[in-house]
Image 1 (cartoon, rainbow, N blue to C red):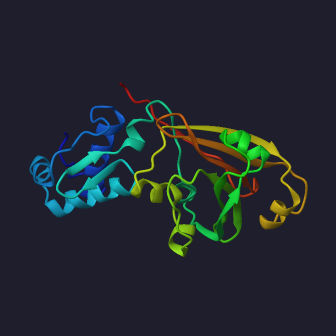
Image 2: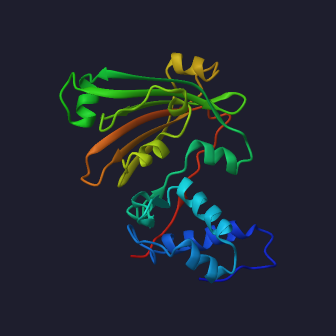
Image 3: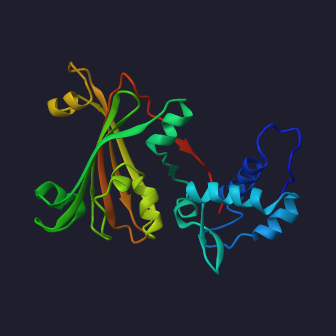
Length: 244
């Protein structure tokens, strides 16, 4: 590992985070690998263990690493097993990069029976139960409406913390990971009820994204339709090439 750059204006823990992240994205540290201990890293970088801990905690939040008491810190499955695929950013991260605050404005969660269309998408029987999470998110104005359907592989809590937090971050805490995503983006005229929710007052085409999330067995676990107010949103994605 490279050492700390004293000229760099970035805090030490950010520099260390970037070094560790590069190790993962380059494939040098692979899924399931146990990374060096805080003590070893503090000696390598010449900084305190508190600084190392701050860098690791940041990467845990970003779902690059996971910590297990008495076992160590390991490279998390969700990052390395998506080699050569789009690294899908959360809406919060996208807004942060644009320098804008973001929040979930409204959210509901319920169990519903799959209709004919959903049964076909998930390849399940009509009437099988699915979680349905609907959310409106934005800054000071609503920007997107998302309609998420998910196989009940775990129980989802109907709490404010969950409803207004990150779905993927919560799933990772329950050891639910995705191995592959498919996304389809198109320009469509949003249904009237969704236009009303997003304060859209004409028939201008809006951005629609369909996302399919698969587990390690290529089973579809989550399907989401999201409508964006195109006047206030620019779709962004970030690609990483990770050598095997």
